Length: 401
Image (tube, rainbow, N blue to C red):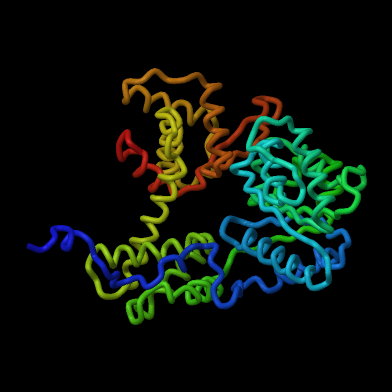
């Protein structure tokens, strides 16, 4: 009697040959990063002194999500480490995701732990339990005992709760915290206005060089996806599928991460339909699914009232499509209506303001300050950054969202 599981699972994937190639961090073609030659060259020039054991420039990189900022920073840092070794210079780099390590203590612990070699230094860097100053002292000792040069990449630097770690890192040498090691910081932000809210002292020492990464155009996105086409089995990609996905992504956002997601989803749609090829018309379905899944992930675990606030903004956006943002008081009115429909007591206006700030922190909405003159003073407007149709669909799927 045949095993019942034989009919349940497919042993050979008819669409994908190596799905891992559709991960954004994968570097195809011997590490070649498509469409970012100038940005890589500029970044390499800024940190070039490090290969001789000298201080690299501190760098701030701006650009929208999915424009290759993190990928290029890691790539240049790794190349620098390898080249410095050939010159007899001990170098390394540390990567911090500031969206995850938002506090000064978390960030300095991550840096110290990633560059430490306890077998050589005899220094322990526990996950928690030490004061911030103790983590710093251990970090300085580790750097001086192991390295000539260290680059520290602070990704999504705008998510840090304050500038304190930037002050410490950018001035460690001149403050005498480290003597044998040179330190360079590469800050990465999706927000071009991030520098405006920086402490002036930090700004002067951190922003020695600034680079803006533009969105990818359709040709670059096509090259990026072509470089990953080995993820699919031979012959399954319709010739027009990648050009269609590239054109769609370039027109909407120029985001390589989203473009690759669309291509992967198109393959999964082909899979689910039992199709032999990934057709061009699957791309439109894939785009909607990619946006929906990404937004669903963003609000996973959020409270009902957090979702009601977003729902209010989506309703306003859909019924007033020419308007660029809505005042807090208008959002609150619609939010109260939703609460009544749900049979729920509404939160205070102040609490709703806090929820809107949380959504702005996650880049789901954008907030802007306006002045109404002496008659009405200043006020805040809120605008959805997500597709309001996607937001409305996800939020009305059910309470399990």
